[in-house]
Each structure stands twice: as structure tokens, then as C-alpha cells.
Length: 268
Picture 1 (tube, rainbow, N blue to C red):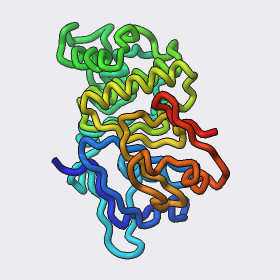
Picture 2 (cartoon, rainbow, N blue to C red; picture 1 turned 60 degrees about the vertical axis):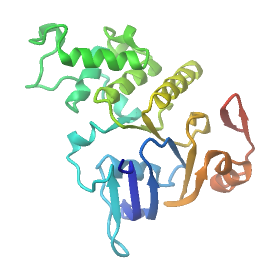
Picture 3 (spheres, helix red, strand yellow; picture 1 turned 180 degrees about the vertical axis):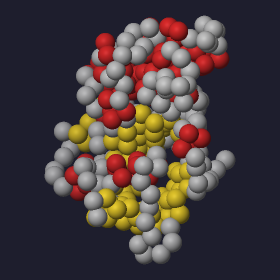
Picture 4 (cartoon, rainbow, N blue to C red; picture 1 turned 90 degrees about the vertical axis):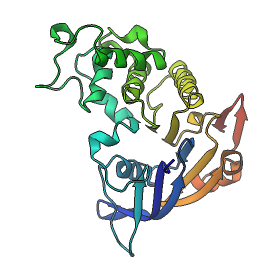
């Protein structure tokens, strides 16, 4: 199988400054990886490269950026292989639509059902058992959110809406999920539910690519951790080796103590 991600000497600019500086790394297919770093470390820039919102620049010679073995992707096709979940996307779903409609919109890469495209369910030409609705319901079942199918997105808690977005990302049954700061604004219970959901998906064979600054987001199924600092790879290796009090103190430039209890990493 092709590698999920391959970067070699990749640099990127944001606001005229080098946000990523000749980064090289390879993530294998079916590998569960966490990318961790403080604000300004290059995490969001890396995400934008993967989602094709930003492109690398050739500053000091050639570079390589491949997703699933390919350098070129049509965005709609890429979404079938790499599901994306982020708090920024959740803000786009603030208008009234049901959870099921939000999930099925993932088939079309739209926020809700697109104008001129498939009609809403209330006036739908699709029969209730159409393939589109069946796929959306299967995705909801995978994240334990069947009960949210008929709820309005505007009436859901942050945790419930986040689960809908995970289901939306799963509707194409992608090889991997890219989770961008996935627990932002979640309360304690919703955070636990998120961990349970991602653990279930990882065990079922969906590759998890987690980008975060929260150590509590790192589930036991994530075996590798990449630390970013100032646009460079600071550390890269097995989670048990990379996640240490000394290393994270250096990364965040403040003295911290790392503890692990019941599979949950926490900074003290």
C-alpha cells in the first residue's frame, strides 16, 4: 500500500514568513500518528498543505509532497480517501439542517445539501431507502449517533455536532481521518466520548492522523508522535519514547510534568 503521507524538504510560507522549514517525514498506511506542537509550530500550515488550501514553495531546491502515493489530487476525490474533522468546519454548519442532512452532504463536499444538487429530505426525489441516505445512516451508526439523525444541528451540543462531523467525514469510508484540534470547546463528557469513538475507529482499521496541542487527545492506539516546533520536526518516534516530561518541557519552553493514568496522557 502507498504511504499515507510523504514529505521531503517541504517548506511553506504564511504572511510572508516561513511557517514550515524543509520538513521531511513519512507516515505509512494504517499508521496512527499524533502531530503535537505549541501555537505557531506549523501544525495548521501542515493541515492546509494536506487539504490543499495551501501549497509548498521551492525555497532551497526541489521538494516532495505526496498523499497516498500521489502528488496531484482533485479535491473532491481526495475527500473520498482522507476524511477531515475540525472545529472550523463545525462553525460552517450553524444554519438549520438535520444531522442526517449534514452527514449526507459529505458526499458532495458541501455545507448542507447544495443548491441545484440533491434536494433536502423533506422534498426529496430520493426514496427513504436510497443509497445516499443508507450510507449516511451507516456513518452515524459507526460513531454511535443514530439518535441525532433527525435533530437540528443548531440544537446540538458541541460534542454532538462534533460526532456528526466525524460521521460526515466517514461517509466515503476513507482510509484515514485527519482530526484537527478535535476536542476544542468540548466538555469533559464529550471529550471522553470523542476518545471512545476514535479508539473504536482505529481498532476497526481507519488510520488516525491527529493534530493537536492537547496531550489528552492522544489515544492508546496512536503509536507514533511527531513534535513540531518553529516549523521543524523537533522529535519523531514511538509515543512512549517521545512523550516525556523533559522533552515536552523543551518543546513548550516551560517546565511541565507528564503523567499517564488509564491510558490518558496529562500535563501537570
